[in-house]
Length: 243
Image (cartoon, rainbow, N blue to C red; front, side, top):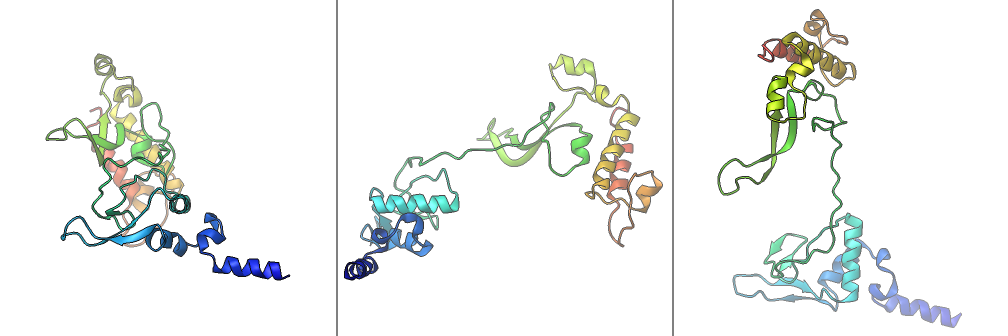
């Protein structure tokens, strides 16, 4: 009995990194390992213009365990190690460890695409179901110091050739507008079908004007709510696609 009590008291007196496994450390204890432990200290900056920065001994086993546990909980894979003068939690300071070694690599997932390169799945849209080209979530910089490189967050569109002859001349494997829709009326019919698909699933407003134009699924719209079905079909009718 006394030995058990002595062991319990010893564990209570021991620091948390000795008393329990990293998976049992609290978030506060994980942070403490990096800011207030035998392996962490506040050190002055390289010049007076830098405020003192909290640094820790990256090679110490408890510190490594804390970092791994933080990454596991936050699901942060692919974190670079800037160390020393850089506070990765607040993204402040001077990243002196350059180039930073990569701790791990993020497994990237991308959407599935069809034969045109347009993404599959998600909310049905007219652009997706009656396309005029391949729609992208990125683009290529056309001029300046970044020319020819990927420009993220700026979407792009690669239009389909108008005729089969044009497609074959440019060696474009995607069917042309002519091959897809035949005529202007065929394109409008495809837009109507795509709009019906979205409206009948509840993703597109179709009101009285859409009903008058022959929409498959309509509903009474509140005042001020736009009749999107009618607007999209009217826009297709007024377009110059295959005219």
